[in-house]
Image (tube, rainbow, N blue to C red; front, side, top):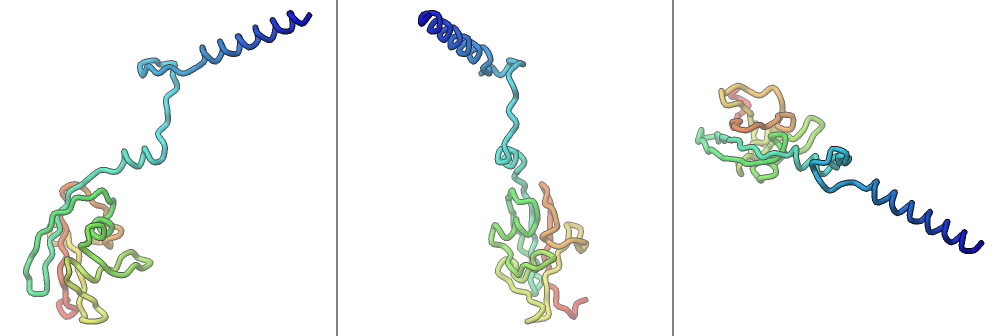
Amino acid sequence: MKNTKLLTLIVALLAVILCFASCGTSNDPTDSAAPSEAPSVSDTTAQDAKTVNITVIVKDKDGKSTELKVETEKANLADALVEKGLVSGDDSEYGLYIKTVNGIRADYNEDKAYWAILDKDGNMLSTGASSTPVAEGDVFQFVYTPADAQ
């Protein structure tokens, strides 16, 4: 009787081992029966982030232009330029209020001037830098603008 129980236990154990061995996933990527792995959140983020190259033209209060090339993986203009140390300012409910561009300060509260942000054709952007997406080849102009120039 002890042998029968032992034999039954061994057979059951072998059946479980065979089941796991036959039910395992294949390492062959061409095996269509193998379940596909969904990318993790970090994998998706790494795949979605792509590097873009943009051009930033800074026009100072004397009218001198400086062209800067920026390579970034950031999604919006403010984040791309803050990351590179090209702009700084104050965060607000509307996004970043840019006061300094390429080391040049324009603070409306201090000198009645601000940074106008234009597209490559010289048209004022309808969004702030924090809401402006960047794409490969974009050109942006930051123009020092005294309040009396309006």
